[in-house]
Image 1 (tube, rainbow, N blue to C red):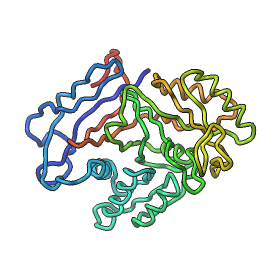
Image 2 (image 1 turned 30 degrees about the horizontal axis):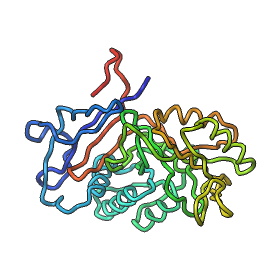
Image 3 (image 1 turned 90 degrees about the horizontal axis):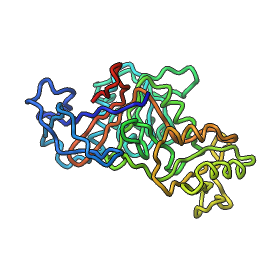
Image 4 (image 1 turned 180 degrees about the vertical axis):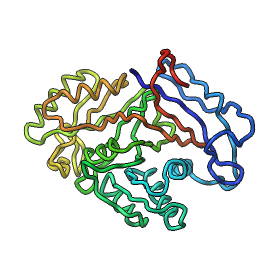
Length: 311
């Protein structure tokens, strides 16, 4: 069944703390932010949308507000937490460390998704552990390059990979988490998706794999091998990226809107030589969306038994 998304808006309360629900606030009213659906029609915010403001939020970057909201709302003492990669995740890691030092949280163990998040976690004083196949992860947060409206299927891995990193490790941690939150800005939550999808392929005979992928999306995408240094070109130059798992990275650059990320992922999974890709579909999943006006929270939910979508 197709997953749909449920959205609510959350803001800091008048005392500077995050508003976790609408129960203690003034009667709800509609907020002015709306997102555009795939059919081009504006989606009205839910009736429970509320807005509160606080002087302490003045001048605070919206992504930092979203990062703090994520830590305050979802992380509890005693949790094993997957530490994401990217700018927003870095802010969340730093804030999580502050909360540990202040005693607001305790007994947290962080599982990094990358070399960078491991470094950030260590500097923030978060006890770390490596991911293992049997690891139990209570919660994870991460950045996403783009998220499909309604389904919350995301693309990760467009960023430059540092220190032999691999998308595979990142996806292992995210998929192992009981609950996942993507921290994004509102321009990354879209009905009409664009840009690239990174694909990890076996280095041996990579060109045959690239040609098969190119045939899949003929006319709608170009396939380039990612370089580690220098300028990008279809062959990846003299120094292509090689991940710690020994894979090359192909960037499938869509020249037409991506109609369905799930279908893209399914097609890529069927290609011989593809080890993994940057499309991740997780349930349950939440998007914490930062905008200049506040923070919106969107959950993916399944249609109810009556066939109506939850809103």
